[in-house]
Amino acid sequence: AQRVTQPEKLLSVFKGAPVELKCNYSYSGSPELFWYVQYSRQRLQLLLRHISRESIKGFTADLNKGETSFHLKKPFAQEEDSAMYYCALSRPGNQFYFGTGTSLTVIP
Amino acid sequence: DVKVTQSSRYLVKRTGEKVFLECVQDMDHENMFWYRQDPGLGLRLIYFSYDVKMKEKGDIPEGYSVSREKKERFSLILESASTNQTSMYLCASSSVVLAGNEQYFGPGTRLTVT
Image (cartoon, rainbow over all chains, first blue to last red; front, side):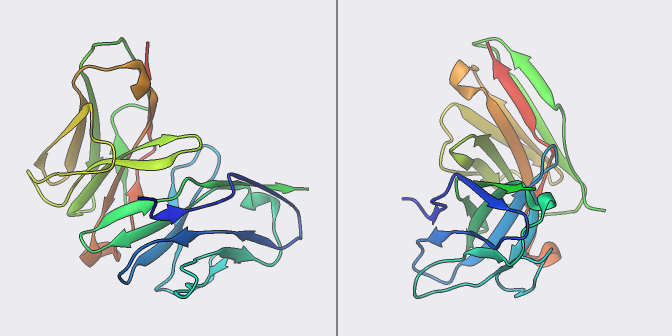
């Protein structure tokens, strides 16, 4: 069963434009949701998690339980935001499920 | 500074060989994971371990086994490597108590099976 869906494999936006990376999940309980990012030639790292409700590098993500979504947003994209982004869900027992990833390219 | 290390960045093996991928973390995390990362498929969990000598199958355990004899070390074993196991392998660790369940990743091992 697909637990985390990222519908866009590739996303290109111009510098300064808003960006939204979509993530939908399927889980009946109360999930813990994350966004991870992998910059070129770097290891995968946590960007943000929903329980923290914080903004990292200008990115925010709101958990919408009604729509089972956790979309990642940034009002003004920067070139350094170009990376691979993964949405992930953690359930009790500490097992993680990752989406298929969205490759974001910010065009100068 | 937290650290997850993997024994090799690049590995080339022949079909049928037994392959060992090693992962070490220095954060005293209880949980350790092995994923493979393939374009268009994202990260797929192979196995995870929540304690020494404990293991659980992930989504794609076929053709793999794991070993966790010490808390800091988690090994992935390909008993008889096949070409469809050519991939990037990522190790991760986490701790609900120490790290709020955040996963920390190693740099990855790119395995090519010829």
